[in-house]
Length: 434
Image (cartoon, rainbow, N blue to C red):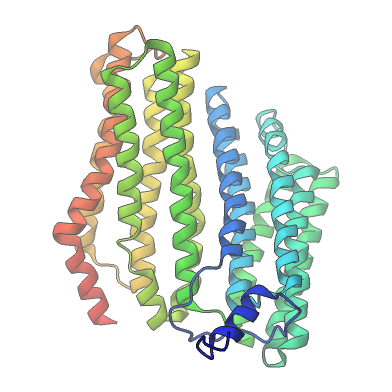
């Protein structure tokens, strides 16, 4: 390598030889830091978990257990998303890409797979009046979290500057795992278990805020965090595309290619594209690099964002079930799509607000305008008289189904067009105010 630039050899040595390295912390001010291939591989297992949870949600809705399915889904999404956020927070501060760090990351991925196998049990138990928690799911969750405890303790030993903070993180996660395990194995009433799960979730969310305010923050990189969250959002949107193709496939199997099939696939792709467009209208990376203290509220806003995106995919799966099984109504399909889409649009607005520290009421009419087509989608079945189950041979029900899905897609178009023509000025004003 004598002819190569002098800096190439050490860089390649770092990338190709993953010996143990000191975990002393990354530079929080590093510019242009990007996501690593290991982080992308790690994310893929979580997107599979989102898809599995969405699939179980769709099955629950199809079987008539709407409330129970939503409860189990909320529990699953929190467990998966919170574990991902914890690892992402840690890796942003201490990713040294050595063999030990890589091994711990792969073990966490194994935990995600175990948790996925526990999801059907969770949804079935909840449908029967039981707790969403179960031992298989908790074992997966513990396998996901124990390696991160070890990594925090390793950072505590090798980064004396942040030792109190890193130890506090390790202790918090360890105590929480004991709580999750006890909630699964103790013979407690369902109400008590659910209350305990809610308290555990709140404690896991509050204690990191208290820890960093009192003891200082680990050296996480705000720009890197913004990229990590945006990439997980992007690949989670792939679930919407996958669910769209499944819905159209079901319709094609029933009646071959038709105008309805073309409209549904176009609407699903437009919905995925406009939700992507709307999310990336929030200037997360530049703002967080200037105001890293806003990262906490911003990251918590993403808990429902990820859940809503996956739930949009569940809504399209409900449309598939409606066509294949002929027992769900257009109204059920419309609600399954409109509610998570509305939640996502609202959360994009909330994320924008907490990130920019701006609560510009002039932005509200744009949000309301984007929700109007969703209300229309829910009203369509009654207007067209399609009150019974969807049947491919029933012209009224099929027309109502196509119209409802198209109206849901229209809501995303309204959001994007509104921001591109008017809303971006609100963003620029908020940026100018700091």
